[in-house]
Length: 462
Ligand SMILES: Cc1cc2nc3c(=O)[nH]c(=O)nc-3n(C[C@H](O)[C@H](O)[C@H](O)COP(=O)(O)OP(=O)(O)OC[C@H]3O[C@@H](n4cnc5c(N)ncnc54)[C@H](O)[C@@H]3O)c2cc1C
Image (cartoon, rainbow, N blue to C red; front, side, top):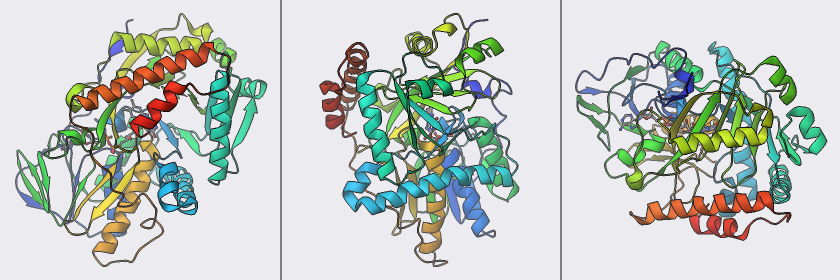
């Protein structure tokens, strides 16, 4: 059997893409209109409706719920949030510690709601294991570990080579850092379960309904306009396709492969009994999970960005990217050299110019948005949604400020990306620099991070 390329993602392979719900039938009104049916939009609908059951909420989704990154991701539900260290510089260490604590609690919150709503998403709380494969990666890992502890993660553990291989036998791993604040899940089972839960609460979802323009109190579609005091943009990596948003968040590609199910003997040779999500400390880092049906799903950057902020359709992935991801798999686990890759796919995530996730409600217009999660959106979308709920309740006079509305990522402003061709050139150069740095670090014996990568990070604002 050859590799299925695209088809949205492996997570749809079993049941296929869903039949879309009915599109918007014409002009209508709502109390809150949510644009985008991924985790951000659906969690926001969920928490708003739970808080104020009489609210009339409409979700408008261009294709079907889970068509975007929420139906394509690596299934790492974990406590990372893009921009925390910058928020510490802007708002002080204590504010960033509160943000981190909120993220730690978010992992538990998502798992708790899955239990309450009976969402079976293959969730398994095994934590996150990040491994180092070279002296330079190990030095970065130690720094990373110390920083995370300084942000309050006292339950994080550092392992040497032997303890690492007792968890997962990654060839060449010289150390690892493990946090309990993470779980593996099946992204599509989560998004489908969430959409069903939201609908059961009485939220209206229209699919096959692309919004062409968002303006105060209006979401415009080819089939009609939804008028609402609050219109929330929850389109993350697709934001550039909306009128006036081309340079807001850069659509960054991430690509994945899923192997055939491994044999018991292969699993025995690897370990991974704890089902931790697995990552490394490379500049162009990889991420992986052991799936519930016994495969390895592994991702990395691939072709980072398409000229003009274009996004793909069905997740089709370049053969060179598939091969590069397979090489990582075999470098980590050489005994899997002959293993079949059943599926390959790609998706887009949103990257703001300063690489900081944000959640915003503009009280003068009623326009809100959340995103720019830079590849850490599975949990962050949930925190963003609860924060949007609180911001709307505050704005409509139903409650005052809350712990969530006081977090430092709320209403953060960031400048736009450069126009083309600078945007394209900048991203290509940055990832070429990262890949070169990773190659040099892998073969070198120095514990210093490659200087080109340091420079690339600084220039890109990462
Ligand atoms: C390959 C890949 C792997 C990843 N792995 C991880 C991971 O393991 N852990 C992690 O934390 N994060 C990961 N991420 C990031 C994470 O998946 C995203 O940050 C998160 O899913 C974003 O959710 P969202 O709802 O904001 O956006 P999306 O899920 O992208 O949803 C946006 C929705 O809006 C719809 N839409 C777009 N434009 C319009 C329009 N004009 N009108 C109406 N609807 C529109 C889209 O069809 C889409 O359904 C990964 C991302 C990718 C691509």
